[in-house]
Image 1 (cartoon, helix red, strand yellow):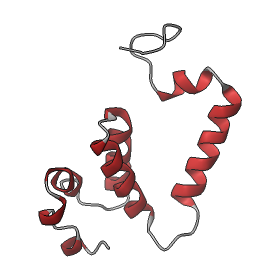
Image 2 (cartoon, one colour):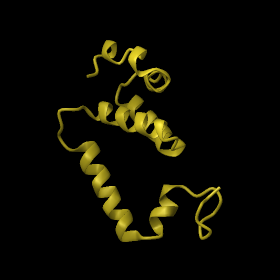
Image 3 (cartoon, rainbow, N blue to C red):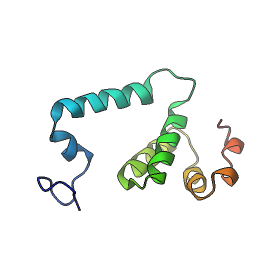
Amino acid sequence: MSFFSRLPGDAGVRHAMALNKAAGRALVQLHTHIMRQPSRFSAGERELIAGYVSGLNDCRYCHDVHSVTAEKFGVDPDLLARMIGDLERSGLEANGLR
């Protein structure tokens, strides 16, 4: 259910960003810069971090998107669920991640 009366009940991020197109474009540019520019963290690690944070704050849409994207970058698909369940025992370091 959407929190915005102007959006359909099944609204997603794109619907919300359409409410303010300039802000939506800026958000996409920020996301692209953070997630895809050169970094000491791989793209998979950044997606894993984003998926973890989204899981903790219970944003199912973002969690699912970042989880699938992390998997496409080679991250173990079960690692994120283990991290949310128990970060200390998740096996994060055993997966070669910092």
